[in-house]
Image (cartoon, rainbow, N blue to C red; front, side, top):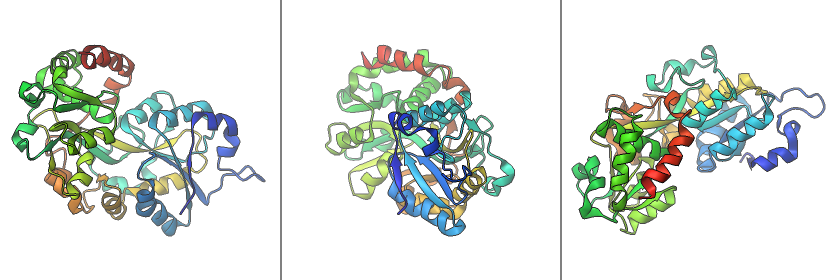
Length: 354
Protein backbone atom coordinates (compact mmCIF):
# COMPACT_ATOMS: atom_id res chain seq x y z
CA UNK A 1 0.00 0.00 0.00
CA UNK A 2 1.41 3.34 -1.02
CA UNK A 3 1.50 6.28 1.36
CA UNK A 4 -1.53 8.55 1.32
CA UNK A 5 -1.42 12.07 2.64
CA UNK A 6 -4.32 14.31 3.53
CA UNK A 7 -3.08 17.88 3.24
CA UNK A 8 -4.82 21.02 4.36
CA UNK A 9 -3.94 24.59 3.46
CA UNK A 10 -2.17 25.20 6.78
CA UNK A 11 -0.09 22.08 6.17
CA UNK A 12 1.06 23.46 2.84
CA UNK A 13 2.09 26.69 4.49
CA UNK A 14 3.92 24.83 7.22
CA UNK A 15 6.01 22.56 5.05
CA UNK A 16 6.51 24.94 2.13
CA UNK A 17 6.94 24.19 -1.53
CA UNK A 18 10.24 22.32 -1.18
CA UNK A 19 8.90 19.44 0.88
CA UNK A 20 6.04 18.95 -1.55
CA UNK A 21 8.05 19.36 -4.71
CA UNK A 22 8.84 15.68 -5.26
CA UNK A 23 12.54 16.55 -5.65
CA UNK A 24 15.70 14.89 -4.48
CA UNK A 25 17.10 16.63 -1.40
CA UNK A 26 20.61 16.19 -2.76
CA UNK A 27 20.17 17.35 -6.34
CA UNK A 28 16.88 19.23 -6.55
CA UNK A 29 16.05 17.19 -9.65
CA UNK A 30 12.58 15.67 -10.17
CA UNK A 31 12.20 12.11 -8.91
CA UNK A 32 11.10 10.39 -12.13
CA UNK A 33 10.41 7.19 -10.20
CA UNK A 34 7.60 8.77 -8.16
CA UNK A 35 4.35 10.33 -9.32
CA UNK A 36 2.27 12.43 -6.93
CA UNK A 37 -1.47 12.12 -7.60
CA UNK A 38 -4.01 14.34 -5.87
CA UNK A 39 -7.51 12.92 -5.62
CA UNK A 40 -10.77 12.95 -3.67
CA UNK A 41 -10.74 11.93 0.01
CA UNK A 42 -13.05 8.95 -0.53
CA UNK A 43 -12.59 5.61 -2.29
CA UNK A 44 -8.80 5.81 -2.07
CA UNK A 45 -8.31 2.15 -1.11
CA UNK A 46 -10.40 1.06 -4.07
CA UNK A 47 -8.48 3.40 -6.38
CA UNK A 48 -5.25 1.98 -5.02
CA UNK A 49 -6.30 -1.48 -6.14
CA UNK A 50 -7.87 -0.44 -9.43
CA UNK A 51 -5.46 2.26 -10.63
CA UNK A 52 -2.42 3.17 -8.56
CA UNK A 53 -0.90 -0.25 -7.85
CA UNK A 54 -1.48 -1.55 -11.41
CA UNK A 55 0.16 1.62 -12.79
CA UNK A 56 3.22 1.01 -10.66
CA UNK A 57 3.35 -2.62 -11.76
CA UNK A 58 3.10 -1.61 -15.41
CA UNK A 59 5.59 1.27 -15.38
CA UNK A 60 7.78 0.94 -12.29
CA UNK A 61 6.72 4.44 -11.22
CA UNK A 62 5.65 4.62 -7.59
CA UNK A 63 2.46 6.56 -6.85
CA UNK A 64 2.19 8.84 -3.85
CA UNK A 65 -1.39 9.85 -3.14
CA UNK A 66 -2.60 13.11 -1.62
CA UNK A 67 -6.26 13.72 -0.86
CA UNK A 68 -8.46 16.68 -0.09
CA UNK A 69 -11.60 18.53 -1.06
CA UNK A 70 -11.82 20.17 -4.48
CA UNK A 71 -11.71 23.65 -2.99
CA UNK A 72 -8.75 22.97 -0.69
CA UNK A 73 -6.72 21.40 -3.46
CA UNK A 74 -7.28 24.36 -5.77
CA UNK A 75 -6.24 26.68 -2.93
CA UNK A 76 -3.05 24.66 -2.46
CA UNK A 77 -2.14 25.19 -6.10
CA UNK A 78 -2.80 28.91 -5.77
CA UNK A 79 -0.43 29.12 -2.81
CA UNK A 80 2.40 27.77 -4.94
CA UNK A 81 2.02 30.57 -7.49
CA UNK A 82 2.84 28.50 -10.56
CA UNK A 83 5.95 26.89 -9.08
CA UNK A 84 6.21 23.13 -8.64
CA UNK A 85 3.22 22.36 -6.38
CA UNK A 86 4.42 18.89 -5.48
CA UNK A 87 1.50 17.40 -7.44
CA UNK A 88 1.90 15.84 -10.87
CA UNK A 89 -1.69 14.86 -11.67
CA UNK A 90 -4.94 16.07 -10.12
CA UNK A 91 -8.16 14.06 -10.32
CA UNK A 92 -10.81 16.72 -9.83
CA UNK A 93 -14.41 17.62 -10.69
CA UNK A 94 -15.08 19.60 -13.84
CA UNK A 95 -16.18 22.85 -12.21
CA UNK A 96 -13.00 23.08 -10.14
CA UNK A 97 -10.90 22.05 -13.14
CA UNK A 98 -12.37 25.01 -15.04
CA UNK A 99 -11.92 27.29 -12.04
CA UNK A 100 -8.26 26.28 -11.80
CA UNK A 101 -7.77 26.92 -15.50
CA UNK A 102 -9.19 30.42 -15.13
CA UNK A 103 -6.59 31.03 -12.43
CA UNK A 104 -3.75 29.68 -14.58
CA UNK A 105 -3.18 26.66 -12.33
CA UNK A 106 -3.20 23.91 -14.98
CA UNK A 107 -1.34 23.20 -18.20
CA UNK A 108 -2.65 21.66 -21.40
CA UNK A 109 -2.40 17.89 -21.63
CA UNK A 110 -0.34 16.95 -24.69
CA UNK A 111 -2.57 14.78 -26.88
CA UNK A 112 0.44 13.24 -28.63
CA UNK A 113 1.53 11.71 -25.32
CA UNK A 114 -1.85 10.16 -24.51
CA UNK A 115 -2.77 7.65 -27.26
CA UNK A 116 -5.83 6.51 -25.29
CA UNK A 117 -7.51 9.83 -26.06
CA UNK A 118 -8.38 8.30 -29.41
CA UNK A 119 -10.36 5.57 -27.69
CA UNK A 120 -12.58 7.51 -25.30
CA UNK A 121 -16.00 9.09 -25.80
CA UNK A 122 -16.18 12.46 -27.52
CA UNK A 123 -17.74 14.19 -24.49
CA UNK A 124 -14.66 13.28 -22.44
CA UNK A 125 -12.47 15.40 -24.72
CA UNK A 126 -13.79 18.93 -24.44
CA UNK A 127 -11.90 21.99 -25.67
CA UNK A 128 -13.22 23.84 -22.62
CA UNK A 129 -10.86 21.81 -20.44
CA UNK A 130 -7.08 21.29 -20.50
CA UNK A 131 -7.42 17.67 -19.41
CA UNK A 132 -9.73 14.77 -20.33
CA UNK A 133 -12.58 13.31 -18.31
CA UNK A 134 -11.95 9.88 -16.82
CA UNK A 135 -15.42 9.36 -15.31
CA UNK A 136 -18.79 11.06 -15.16
CA UNK A 137 -21.85 11.41 -12.93
CA UNK A 138 -25.47 11.37 -14.08
CA UNK A 139 -28.17 13.47 -12.47
CA UNK A 140 -31.54 11.84 -11.81
CA UNK A 141 -33.89 10.68 -9.08
CA UNK A 142 -33.21 8.16 -6.33
CA UNK A 143 -36.59 6.86 -5.19
CA UNK A 144 -38.30 4.23 -3.07
CA UNK A 145 -39.85 1.59 -5.30
CA UNK A 146 -42.50 0.84 -2.68
CA UNK A 147 -43.71 4.44 -2.86
CA UNK A 148 -43.22 5.64 -6.44
CA UNK A 149 -43.21 4.34 -9.99
CA UNK A 150 -40.24 4.99 -12.26
CA UNK A 151 -42.44 7.21 -14.44
CA UNK A 152 -43.47 9.41 -11.51
CA UNK A 153 -39.88 9.60 -10.26
CA UNK A 154 -38.61 10.69 -13.68
CA UNK A 155 -40.97 13.67 -13.87
CA UNK A 156 -39.87 17.10 -12.65
CA UNK A 157 -43.51 17.54 -11.58
CA UNK A 158 -42.78 15.25 -8.62
CA UNK A 159 -41.03 18.01 -6.69
CA UNK A 160 -44.09 20.26 -6.83
CA UNK A 161 -46.57 17.51 -5.90
CA UNK A 162 -48.06 18.53 -2.55
CA UNK A 163 -49.10 14.95 -1.80
CA UNK A 164 -45.42 14.25 -1.10
CA UNK A 165 -44.86 17.37 1.01
CA UNK A 166 -42.15 16.77 3.61
CA UNK A 167 -41.10 13.51 1.92
CA UNK A 168 -38.74 14.86 -0.75
CA UNK A 169 -35.15 16.12 -0.89
CA UNK A 170 -33.27 18.25 -3.37
CA UNK A 171 -29.52 18.96 -3.42
CA UNK A 172 -28.05 22.25 -2.33
CA UNK A 173 -26.52 24.04 -5.28
CA UNK A 174 -23.08 23.70 -3.66
CA UNK A 175 -22.90 19.94 -4.33
CA UNK A 176 -22.43 18.27 -7.72
CA UNK A 177 -26.07 17.33 -8.19
CA UNK A 178 -27.16 20.83 -7.19
CA UNK A 179 -26.07 22.66 -10.33
CA UNK A 180 -27.21 19.74 -12.49
CA UNK A 181 -30.69 19.96 -10.94
CA UNK A 182 -30.85 23.74 -11.32
CA UNK A 183 -29.90 23.38 -14.98
CA UNK A 184 -32.48 20.63 -15.46
CA UNK A 185 -35.21 22.89 -14.09
CA UNK A 186 -33.98 25.80 -16.19
CA UNK A 187 -34.06 23.65 -19.32
CA UNK A 188 -37.51 22.17 -18.73
CA UNK A 189 -39.26 25.17 -17.16
CA UNK A 190 -37.34 28.06 -18.68
CA UNK A 191 -35.21 29.01 -21.65
CA UNK A 192 -32.25 26.72 -21.04
CA UNK A 193 -29.80 25.24 -18.53
CA UNK A 194 -28.45 28.63 -17.44
CA UNK A 195 -31.88 30.25 -16.90
CA UNK A 196 -31.45 30.41 -13.14
CA UNK A 197 -34.08 33.14 -12.78
CA UNK A 198 -36.79 30.68 -13.79
CA UNK A 199 -35.12 27.75 -12.04
CA UNK A 200 -34.88 29.57 -8.72
CA UNK A 201 -38.50 30.78 -8.97
CA UNK A 202 -39.74 27.24 -9.61
CA UNK A 203 -37.53 25.60 -6.99
CA UNK A 204 -38.52 28.28 -4.48
CA UNK A 205 -42.15 27.26 -5.05
CA UNK A 206 -41.14 23.62 -4.50
CA UNK A 207 -39.15 24.36 -1.34
CA UNK A 208 -42.05 23.88 1.15
CA UNK A 209 -42.36 20.27 -0.06
CA UNK A 210 -38.72 19.53 0.77
CA UNK A 211 -37.75 17.85 4.01
CA UNK A 212 -34.19 18.90 3.29
CA UNK A 213 -31.82 20.48 0.81
CA UNK A 214 -28.98 18.05 1.39
CA UNK A 215 -25.25 18.63 1.17
CA UNK A 216 -23.78 15.14 1.61
CA UNK A 217 -24.23 11.58 0.37
CA UNK A 218 -24.77 10.26 3.88
CA UNK A 219 -27.64 12.65 4.50
CA UNK A 220 -29.69 11.63 1.50
CA UNK A 221 -29.00 7.88 1.67
CA UNK A 222 -29.93 7.74 5.35
CA UNK A 223 -33.14 9.68 4.72
CA UNK A 224 -34.33 7.37 1.96
CA UNK A 225 -33.33 4.11 3.68
CA UNK A 226 -35.18 5.19 6.83
CA UNK A 227 -38.22 6.08 4.68
CA UNK A 228 -38.14 9.70 5.81
CA UNK A 229 -38.20 10.67 2.14
CA UNK A 230 -39.57 8.87 -0.90
CA UNK A 231 -37.30 10.54 -3.45
CA UNK A 232 -34.26 12.76 -3.88
CA UNK A 233 -32.60 14.32 -6.88
CA UNK A 234 -29.11 12.78 -6.86
CA UNK A 235 -26.28 11.53 -9.01
CA UNK A 236 -26.56 7.88 -10.00
CA UNK A 237 -23.65 6.71 -7.84
CA UNK A 238 -25.72 7.27 -4.71
CA UNK A 239 -27.91 4.32 -5.68
CA UNK A 240 -25.28 1.68 -6.43
CA UNK A 241 -24.55 0.38 -2.94
CA UNK A 242 -28.16 0.74 -1.78
CA UNK A 243 -29.50 -1.34 -4.66
CA UNK A 244 -26.73 -3.93 -4.27
CA UNK A 245 -27.71 -4.26 -0.60
CA UNK A 246 -31.30 -4.99 -1.56
CA UNK A 247 -32.85 -1.76 -0.32
CA UNK A 248 -36.24 -0.98 -1.94
CA UNK A 249 -34.79 1.84 -4.03
CA UNK A 250 -33.98 2.56 -7.66
CA UNK A 251 -32.62 5.44 -9.70
CA UNK A 252 -33.99 6.91 -12.90
CA UNK A 253 -32.94 9.56 -15.38
CA UNK A 254 -35.22 12.61 -15.65
CA UNK A 255 -37.70 12.74 -18.51
CA UNK A 256 -36.04 15.94 -19.75
CA UNK A 257 -33.28 18.32 -18.72
CA UNK A 258 -30.74 15.53 -18.14
CA UNK A 259 -27.25 16.79 -17.29
CA UNK A 260 -24.03 15.15 -16.21
CA UNK A 261 -20.82 16.21 -14.52
CA UNK A 262 -17.35 14.88 -15.25
CA UNK A 263 -14.25 14.17 -13.23
CA UNK A 264 -11.08 15.17 -15.03
CA UNK A 265 -7.35 14.44 -15.12
CA UNK A 266 -5.40 17.69 -14.92
CA UNK A 267 -1.67 18.45 -14.85
CA UNK A 268 -0.81 21.41 -12.58
CA UNK A 269 1.31 24.25 -13.87
CA UNK A 270 4.91 23.69 -12.76
CA UNK A 271 4.47 19.94 -12.16
CA UNK A 272 7.82 18.18 -11.83
CA UNK A 273 7.06 14.90 -13.60
CA UNK A 274 5.07 15.85 -16.67
CA UNK A 275 6.08 12.83 -18.76
CA UNK A 276 5.04 10.43 -16.00
CA UNK A 277 1.82 12.39 -15.60
CA UNK A 278 0.98 11.77 -19.25
CA UNK A 279 1.77 8.08 -18.81
CA UNK A 280 -0.62 7.97 -15.87
CA UNK A 281 -3.42 9.72 -17.79
CA UNK A 282 -3.02 7.30 -20.70
CA UNK A 283 -3.11 4.37 -18.28
CA UNK A 284 -6.27 5.58 -16.51
CA UNK A 285 -8.10 6.00 -19.83
CA UNK A 286 -7.31 2.48 -21.06
CA UNK A 287 -10.23 0.06 -21.33
CA UNK A 288 -8.64 -2.30 -18.81
CA UNK A 289 -8.17 0.36 -16.13
CA UNK A 290 -11.58 1.88 -16.83
CA UNK A 291 -13.12 -1.57 -16.33
CA UNK A 292 -11.33 -2.08 -13.02
CA UNK A 293 -12.26 1.40 -11.85
CA UNK A 294 -15.90 0.78 -12.71
CA UNK A 295 -15.84 -2.52 -10.82
CA UNK A 296 -13.91 -1.46 -7.73
CA UNK A 297 -14.50 2.29 -7.43
CA UNK A 298 -17.91 2.53 -9.07
CA UNK A 299 -16.82 5.10 -11.66
CA UNK A 300 -18.80 5.36 -14.87
CA UNK A 301 -16.19 4.80 -17.62
CA UNK A 302 -15.51 7.15 -20.53
CA UNK A 303 -13.89 4.39 -22.60
CA UNK A 304 -16.69 2.65 -24.54
CA UNK A 305 -14.70 -0.60 -24.56
CA UNK A 306 -14.72 -0.81 -20.76
CA UNK A 307 -16.83 -3.46 -19.09
CA UNK A 308 -19.79 -2.17 -17.08
CA UNK A 309 -20.23 -4.21 -13.86
CA UNK A 310 -23.63 -5.62 -12.99
CA UNK A 311 -24.00 -3.28 -9.98
CA UNK A 312 -23.74 -0.18 -12.18
CA UNK A 313 -25.81 -1.70 -14.99
CA UNK A 314 -28.60 -2.33 -12.45
CA UNK A 315 -28.71 1.41 -11.72
CA UNK A 316 -28.25 3.15 -15.07
CA UNK A 317 -28.78 0.38 -17.64
CA UNK A 318 -28.05 1.31 -21.25
CA UNK A 319 -27.24 4.93 -20.39
CA UNK A 320 -23.68 3.91 -19.48
CA UNK A 321 -23.06 2.69 -23.03
CA UNK A 322 -23.63 6.19 -24.45
CA UNK A 323 -24.98 8.90 -22.12
CA UNK A 324 -25.14 11.44 -24.95
CA UNK A 325 -27.36 9.16 -27.04
CA UNK A 326 -29.50 8.67 -23.94
CA UNK A 327 -30.16 12.41 -23.79
CA UNK A 328 -27.54 13.62 -21.32
CA UNK A 329 -25.56 16.79 -21.86
CA UNK A 330 -22.59 18.43 -20.19
CA UNK A 331 -22.61 22.03 -19.02
CA UNK A 332 -20.39 24.80 -20.34
CA UNK A 333 -17.92 25.86 -17.63
CA UNK A 334 -17.71 29.34 -19.16
CA UNK A 335 -21.33 29.82 -18.06
CA UNK A 336 -20.71 28.56 -14.53
CA UNK A 337 -17.39 29.76 -13.16
CA UNK A 338 -18.03 33.53 -13.42
CA UNK A 339 -21.47 33.23 -11.79
CA UNK A 340 -20.82 30.58 -9.14
CA UNK A 341 -20.68 32.77 -6.02
CA UNK A 342 -23.66 34.84 -7.12
CA UNK A 343 -25.77 31.76 -7.83
CA UNK A 344 -24.86 30.12 -4.51
CA UNK A 345 -25.94 33.25 -2.65
CA UNK A 346 -29.13 33.55 -4.65
CA UNK A 347 -30.01 29.89 -4.13
CA UNK A 348 -29.79 30.39 -0.36
CA UNK A 349 -32.01 33.47 -0.51
CA UNK A 350 -34.49 32.44 -3.17
CA UNK A 351 -34.80 28.69 -2.68
CA UNK A 352 -33.64 27.15 0.58
CA UNK A 353 -34.94 30.00 2.73
CA UNK A 354 -38.52 29.52 1.46
